[in-house]
Image (cartoon, rainbow, N blue to C red; front, side, top):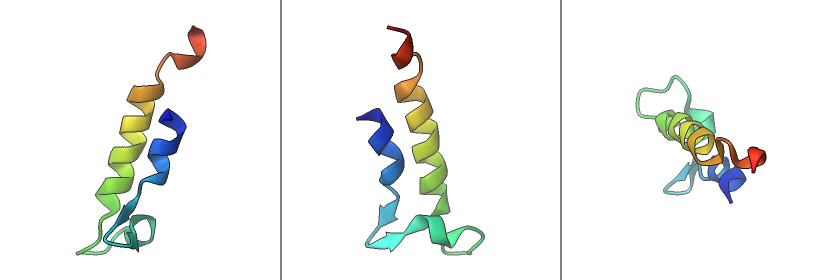
Length: 47
């Protein structure tokens, strides 16, 4: 499940990965998903 977090990068049907550098883009959501994925998956392979 934690690997799927990075796939959640759509906002109102728009792919936020394509909005990097745009004034009204949603690229911050992509960065947050990367951070959430790192936190959620941290240490999961050590168990």
